[in-house]
Amino acid sequence: MSERRGQVAVLDFGAQYTQLIARRVREAGVYCEIWPHAATAAALRAAGVRAVILSGGPASVYEPGAPQADPALLAGGGLPVLGICYGHQLLAKACGGRVEADPGGREYGRAELEREAGDDTLLHGLPSHTQVWMSHGDTVLQAPPGFRPLAHTDRSPVAAMADPAGGRYGVQFHLEVAHTPLGSEVLRNFLFGICGLQADWSMASFAAEAIAAVRAQVGPSGRALVGLSGGVDSAVAAELVRRAIGDRLTAIFVDHGLLRAGERAEVEAAFAGRMPLRVADASDRFLGALQGVTDPERKRKIVGAEFIAVFEQEAARIGPVDFLVQGTVYPDVVESGATGKAAQTIKSHHNVGGLPERMRLQLVEPLRTLFKDEVRRLGQELDLPHDLVWRQPFPGPGLAIRIIGAVTEDKLATLRHADQILRDELRPLGLGQAHLWQAFAVLPDVRSVGVMGDARTYGHLVALRAVSSEDGMTADWARLPHDVLERIASRIVNEVAGVNRVVYDITSKPPATIEWE
Ligand code: XMP
Image (cartoon, rainbow, N blue to C red):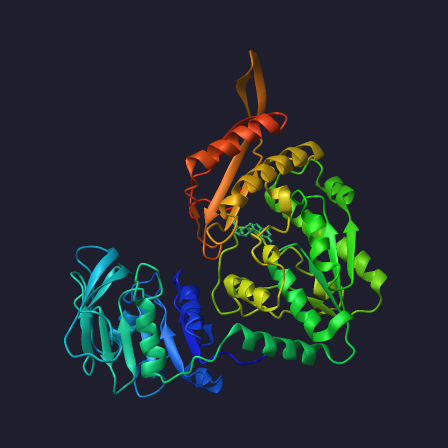
């Protein structure tokens, strides 16, 4: 992969919105990456960074151990800096402004931003009043010497400030969220008007660079393997590498018997003509290993271990190979701490962890710097089939983690059938795409009493889960139309043998997760 780390660095102070800031910058056509909050001005300069954004974060600037930035970045006169929320407070405090805990508690939610007269820098072109999104406990009461307040809200006397001579700017509001409708204007003012950057980053340029980088990494005779999961990440990674090295790439698809209805055929149809493809039918082996296992993390480990074993077996039949292509995406890199952030492990998603080391393969990860929606745009750029590009994420352990309790052939058949009905009913509504992050059926280990005809039944419960999300890290339950839910429920109860009750999951993430296990 190219070593270029982007013209803009977003320093991560722990906000849930940090990735969103990075994405907004890229949407403006400027490549950027997330850095640890303690990155030094010298390191940023050495990497070619030309502007710095300080993210928000959960801490108070007065807390002991509150995350700090390199003082050289805040001193002014160096790289241009834009602080957002916590970053704004940090800048204000470090430069001698007055920052205090808001006596009224947190300012949270929508607020009206009123501009002060005479600013033509950060808020250039905005109306005198505009809506912004606030979420903070500390408030900047007075701008530091050398800074000019640019705007206020009811509760924030210095909701935006600027020191144009020193290249330092701050906003209390979250310009990156959709609830700040003109947020991207503010960002563009910073990137283009203030920092003089060019919007030169596009998917076409990314694809060309990434293909060249893969070619350089694999060399003129290197051979590579890719494991297709049916998902968009591995598909896009595979296609990109194919464009770089042609049929020196072989794809392996492991059918672990935990797939949804029709999935294997879809993968075969999409890839068989594109690259050498080996399909391993290993359902018996996976189901055997999973027999009687109820613990979710054990299920994941078993599926991961079996997957590696089958993959190795298949790979051995291909002959010598040097590289393994993986569809690792940017949120995986950020979550695994590579940018300095230590995220807690809620579920272990590293389905094939350990594979490259065991097989002595070097990793090729051409999507490491992309967000999921960018991967989809790249897939379109590479002319992959529409349905594949817009496929919902599907977990590596498949239906094993959607069957609560032990996995059996019967339960798999029940769940597959119910899930297919759900997907059938959603497809014509176009809800299978952008609006929904994932929609699926779950088979809890629950039976309940029902009545069919005149007879008492004691059948399975099927739960439906549909969520909207930007990146899978937080999610909201989807407000599916009631008549659609009704149709899905009645079809499932009528058509899927042994099911007599359907429920809809209305929890968001957090506190629940998307998958039930
Ligand atoms: P959770 O359930 O953690 O899911 O809210 C977030 C996203 O990750 C997917 N997921 C997995 N993906 N292996 C995967 O490859 C896993 O073990 C796994 N568990 C959850 C989930 O489908 C959602 O998109």
